[in-house]
Length: 392
Image (cartoon, rainbow, N blue to C red; front, top):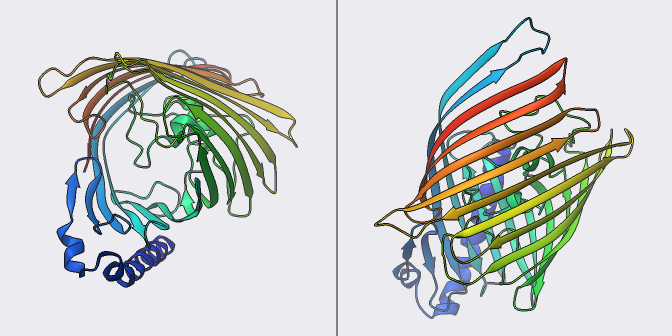
């Protein structure tokens, strides 16, 4: 917690000091003029900016409240007859974030804190980085952040632009973890081609698989603070943007097709094991409410000489807005195959009610899964989840 507060305070001090020094020259006005340019937008927060937009600060966050009910059937897993286990819980989550740019947008900063609990692996700190505009189309980010490990894992800094309540078990096994390091990124062709190269202290695999699947794994990645990770990849799409700017579902229904495709290779060098993980992904929005995306991972462990694989495919349909609400439907299938013989799959069905796209929505989903060859037999599970999200 102390590390989180020190890092956050340092970033805010950097932003405040530079902004205070630079604003009068950039705008020809006082800090009062900076405050007079404040504007609020749901999902983006409250933004204070200089007249030329080169210096800004945005304050925002999100609230989430939900309920989950899960049933496990441990039939045959060392038990006599059926053994059912039930779990139900009410869950709340809250995040606060501050970000912006200074010195005519040459430098940027972003801090995101988990205000409700500390499940992100570093106290309450989720993101804390500073960025620098290196050259035309090239930027550098330093600090704790996402390091481009997959489309679903990278999507949105606030982790809310999803049609399902939970990410797939494959995403949670092979990606979806933040780490501390440097990420160099660039773009060309009006932002349609994007590339990245990163080096970090730790890995990108989450190793926090779905709560309904994969109670054991194969050569699971288990990086610590002494491990180093290098990642490199590229993506290409019909519109400007990369995996971080992708938002699931065709909520806009613009009549214009939009797609993205990309690949990333990650090498994690730890004291006990070395991993090489390859991710390929693709996403499509038809423009008429139909959308789909798919990802595949393969991970090789050098010392154990094992290969683990995982994938998911997702399809959805979002209807036109009816009054203040826009209905949406989604289905997803995911699988993970470990080299030690453990296999798992899950199927998810969801119904969503969007009031302001992903910034204000209700989500209801049913998930069913099975794990084979764990201990003595299979483990079946099913879950019902309800979630309300407000991004402010």
